[in-house]
Length: 429
Image (cartoon, rainbow, N blue to C red):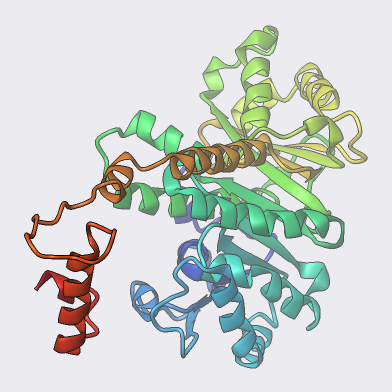
């Protein structure tokens, strides 16, 4: 389904709103809101409200008709990766944020609270943002989109992320869906393809990649005619987003002529791997998911050949093996007159936290152990310095004291007294 953004024959299942928090969350929200389609009267279908403390960071986002920016005054220099400051800033401006959000997202079918876990503003305010939306009528139409930090972003960032993940994990059963973006996965995938690219190029790529991945899921559920008797429609997509727990989305594309329906090895292993690897994150226990849905799209000529009963049965058998506990497992096949390749989209809901969280915990513990080792060691330079004692010149003067250094002590004391100086180093003058 190439050029999904540049076609005027497509439709959308849901009207999304994005509440961006902090630099990372605002970047994803902005990229999502500035997606431009060729759909008549709906060229920019999504809206975003960007919330940040740092005034300079907000300036980076160009003015746009469906984007609002709200800088939290009094915190113009940012939160300095301090969760407490980010939370305090949101609470101080809660009434203003609430008024803007309720007004701006009134017609939205679903609102994504987007935040990059690890910093100060987004990490610190994300729980308060969810509380605010829940208290104002968005309980059944909002979810979280959070990013996990890379290994090399430092212990403060990782510990900040884990701090908030602990809180989110405890409340998962009371929340809607949570879409996790693993920055380490995206970074590794990107650097394999473009090892000479800059960090700014990667950030631009990753934000667009995240926004497009969600947009395509929103398109495929509303744009094509089902041909296999089942349609995973807009209402079912919304129910999926309302499912507590994490969601994982995946996409797989085949050249239509590469599929040999009589030989499962030409498509089934890749299909299974695409679900296991995910598009934005991986490492889930798929067996515990509560929902899984597959949507397949091909050109009518290819669809007639590919979407046979045996082909669909093999897809159904595969997802049954991956997610045996899922209560709903629809497999929908569509024809797209303007399509070229076979595109397969999968969404899995009701998942637990991914293995990436375990890796971050291990990384944090490793950093703490290294810190204990380093700071627990005696600083050899400091030890040598503290063990140095300057010998005073020998003075031939009578002394009534048994202490051979009493005279020099008296001189020092007299000098300090005469100078009337509080300089701790005055004795050296």
